[in-house]
Length: 346
Image (cartoon, rainbow, N blue to C red; front, top):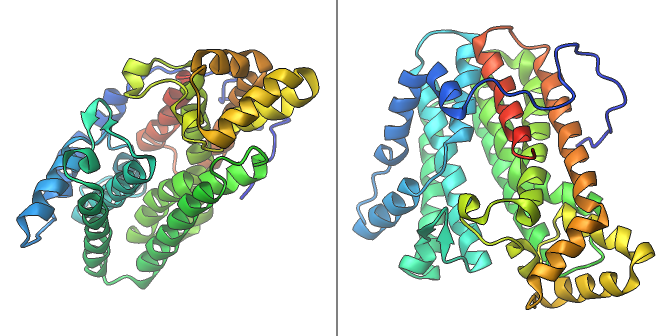
């Protein structure tokens, strides 16, 4: 994993600030037919004989987000071979199935009652049901992966799923730890977030027999995933709670070691001892009756400016990785996804 700061920009067409020209729907439309088929396959590929498994699975899949990870798989597949690929659509659906499973488990760990404004599986049923259905989704995903009869593909997904689980455990290990460092944070998000983006890109290359692009796609997935997670964590202190489907400061109340909190503690330790102690105690205890005050403390510490710069650095690294890939509208779609993510900071 790399975390190198950008000192120069070797690609002339990479702007220093996001200048998005397409909406998410526009990018989705680039592979509209593939996406529609894939979206139906996410639930259609499940075949459990247990009705409760199907009911809970449909609940969590229907509550899903924009399907960004499978969209990336479809864009990558078309970038290498611009023809409909049933295998690519199937792999994209499997990727979303795995992502859904991680969200179900996350909601149990975080004791979340809502995700994107809708009741979570654990709130609708119970924790035990949600965990077991999440396990089923992972098991079914690998059951479907076997159908490709590709050991390299299984290797990428099995290694990646282990990394995702380790990232989640590492986050739990550092929960309520005010001494967590930026290095700890990067190790966490490399597993819990970026690894699935890497699987989404590299899986498509293996399917299309374009293994010479695995490194570039891995770099793109990792850096885009890093940027995506840093931006999400910044928005926990500065975003619109209605749009995010959660309250500002939720990560702090849960004691999660996010970069805005880590950097704020580092900056406040030398500039505002009282503020540092307030934030440190909040991280340790998860008690935030003064949440608004703590949010303002983080905002005024300079932490968010630092995090935004780090997110833009990771975005540029992702964009640079794209430069070695085939130049077509599908690569442009991947580029525009990075721009859209960065635009959330403005």
